[in-house]
Amino acid sequence: MRARALLPLLVCSLLVACGQRDAGAESAAYAAAAPAADAPMAEAKLAEGGEQASRRYLAISHSLEVETPAEQVEPLWREVQQQALSMGADLISAELSRSDLQAPAASLSLRLPPAQVPALFALLAKGGELVNTRTDSEDKSAEVIDVEARLKNLSEARDRLRVLMNERGAKLADVLEVQKALTETQSQLDSWQGQRKLLAQQTEKVKIELRIHAPRSAIERSALAPLRDTWQQLGYQLAQSLAVLLSFVVVVLPWMLLIVPAGWLIRRGWRKRRGAKM
Image 1 (cartoon, one colour):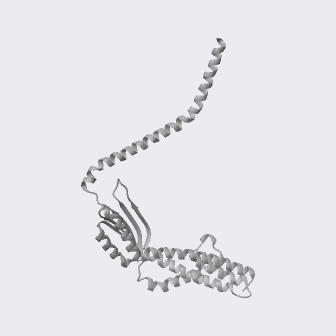
Image 2 (image 1 turned 30 degrees about the vertical axis):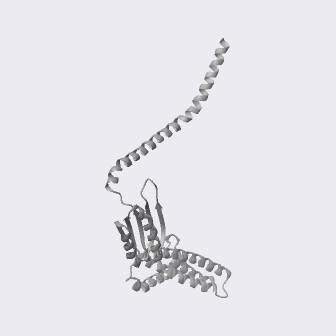
Image 3 (image 1 turned 90 degrees about the vertical axis):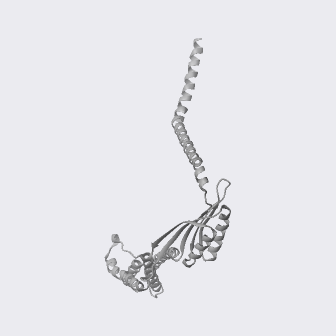
């Protein structure tokens, strides 16, 4: 294939891979290839639009707070982990805090198949009291449709470039240009595939943020509140005093390094003059 016939096709393939126009790099070849690049994207969206228009991709998350007796915090935390994993959940994080001064508390962050969410709620209701819930939902349909259209067009562009690579009689310069375009297209394809996997994680499973802790009695809340407030005030005052001390040292220390040696030299000279007079 001659280089003159190959170049417009390469530009078209790169434009399809990019999925966007660069106004600062317009040229005659770009102007000729742009309509061809826009057409596959539009055709892909029309072809897939009928199937995907009826489906919504929602990123749903639940924030839950459960109160249970102090001795049940850790067992419930471990049971929820075990059951969630058996339900097909993806564990994001798990934390358990225990100390002699505070009641135990635990937290879990995971992604769960939507069909298993009611079972998890039932398990939490059985193990403690659900005192706080919050549900958030974000529609990701437009992002999913756009990413899938880009993936389709990038895959087609990659396949066309592979065909060009295998053509016989192509000049070395043409082969190098095709190889460069193929590398760039594959790189963009990998990037968009990663974006699609991220969207799949967000839309195919429900995110659960769970916090488990022991209930605090009214006496504990009212009697210990003044001590807690006083402790916080003492900590603030200590930090403020330390800040003042550090500021004083920073300001005074350089001058002390000058004044002390100068005073010592002056005193030594005065003693010498006094000794000479005597």
